Image (cartoon, rainbow, N blue to C red; front, side):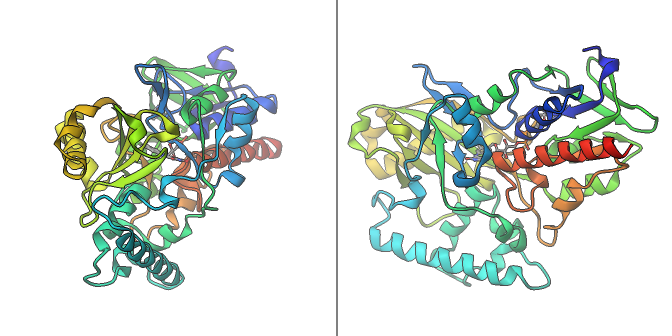
Length: 413
Ligand SMILES: Cc1cc2nc3c(=O)[nH]c(=O)nc-3n(C[C@H](O)[C@H](O)[C@H](O)COP(=O)(O)OP(=O)(O)OC[C@H]3O[C@@H](n4cnc5c(N)ncnc54)[C@H](O)[C@@H]3O)c2cc1C
């Protein structure tokens, strides 16, 4: 397809961009995904460990799996769905965190979620941290879990947005990788890789998409780049779109990073079990032992803890994990684990974080971000979703919605 022949350009080839392009291509439109990276998938990214096992450095869980469109796509691709209940739905190993304490913690966390739910209906919106019990014994751990959910501590999250998150509680996985499934879904789509967009000039009749390797023209555009990238890209739109940039700033990406470790004598642990590094502080990692029964540990870091470690480098994550594991399992345990892979999502120039949250008072900015401009600039990406934000199915749904908006706009024109 000649570049001057294109009707719709989709900026970004993650879950949202792939969904949009698939819908438009099926409708017979000439569309093109313009992607900065040398691969499709964005924050969905499966890589192979040294023995060839797939590991997901980005999304791994099919959240709300009973209504998640990626389940059917994975099945179409003949991939294997694993329905083992996730470790956070079962008791964790009692090391350093006895069962009675775990029950007490879960009760307190449920009560906290209920207070957030009640407060979310009232004005004004507040930071979710305001709903913690003052001086509560489990506040630090509730906050640590929040850094895995939102990528940020509760003092920075809108209670209303936190409550808007709509999850059915059914969580499955794809054995061959969520990232591999999403990337494969884009296989037959028209894509230009290694092509970062620098500016979108929408002053003329045709929109000019200025990239690092030349200018592409289109009638419509769907922008799916992550909010923090959008907020930091000065002069991205010409003429400028201050409402969009402000919305992106109010919906920044929090940070969650995953470190994969190989584990010797893994059978000592139950398949898909979990260990908290500590239960008395926010700056802690959690350890998913033997994911899919594999001889690995998947370590989760979130919020300021992850941000501080990112500044020091990859080794800092490994050192942090080993020191917590040795504290719980004894000094010999250090010899049983080796680093496989980590990706620092804050340092990634085309992500700048992991998933979006709304700062207090800003939950409604998701609708502002998602609103079309002039009937020819459209917006998608997980941050545009009211209830499925921060997820890959949220990305898919918003991409599909933006494609439908394009089709309706073309009918009207
Ligand atoms: C560690 C981690 C764990 C996660 N766990 C889960 C999980 O278990 N379940 C779940 O559902 N979700 C999870 N997520 C979130 C999920 O991965 C994302 O919400 C989803 O992939 C976002 O899709 P998207 O299309 O909105 O954005 P992206 O995937 O970020 O796609 C945007 C695309 O735009 C490209 N781009 C950026 N700038 C430019 C530019 N200037 N020009 C051209 N292209 C550009 C990017 O390279 C990217 O490919 C996780 C994310 C991370 C990082």
